[in-house]
Length: 431
Image (cartoon, rainbow, N blue to C red; front, side, top):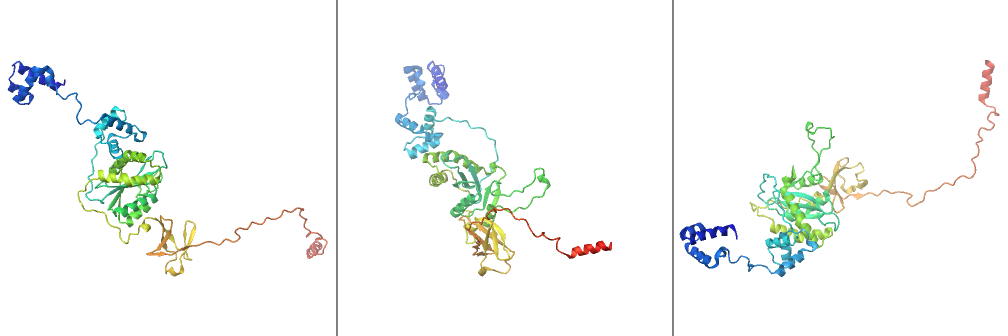
């Protein structure tokens, strides 16, 4: 019997003994006088048990069968579902095994079967939340997660994510390295699918920001900042008219960081259930299962329905922009040196003022090399040096078997008359 039921019994007992009127008892219990009469009649017939609800101890008519409970627990006991929480487990039971179980019911079942243990949330420090941007495409957060996504079933993968600040729409790809070329490939895919956003929000990694190198004993505050050239990604964003905004802390780009936290829980388990063990399988699951679920369940409507993305124009040549670009000097023979190789400019494209001028060299993602002088691409050809004597064995001199003969040029030198002897004799006679 609960405390509320005890209090009700005391009030009814006073009314039964006529210590208070039925109207006063009705006011204390918050019921009508007619209901007090019913309760007094039940108290006279059944005693103190009348204040206990009649359905207590009886199973609910909506209770799931015991067979459904055992089937669900048997499925979730499999090693592939280790670490699943009630919410994610309820989704997989509904989608993969056609078992309709609410997450709260499943929570009790999993706790009872010791498949899951609730955790108390830690008190997190309160930070001032930055309001979302109003339009889709105004700001896109960009970052890479270093995590064991395949749980040692395959090679180590990295997840590059781009999440829109206004809508939380996610675009992501698995890559084999967090390099400039891989980030450019993901950027290429985003631009082709959505267009050019107004700004990207990233950390200050070396991919995006060139840092001045200084000695450790040099105080940085005493020196003026040096205007350093942009990185390859920074240059590409400038050519695409996209603003780059650096974040000064991980909390500043919290939307993409929280996205990684969700992915490291749900995406890892989804890859495990799907049996993904390679880059191709991981990206296939990411594109067909995880990203559609994310963009269907976790996105929000922007405050402004206008899309801030801008289309790619004819002047935006993605193969040229998203490449490794350097400058080289044209030699007197209209040749260009690039990483130990010599390229010749054809005579039909030779222009006045080319010698000793700079041209743009693009090492593109498909492995080709393109060179542009001002606004014209040159049909350069790789020069192959002719090496004579290739394939011939070097000649080996035979060793001398007999000892070398002594030189005979001094033999009889002093026996022959010579002007030198006459000069010596004359000099001795005069002295």
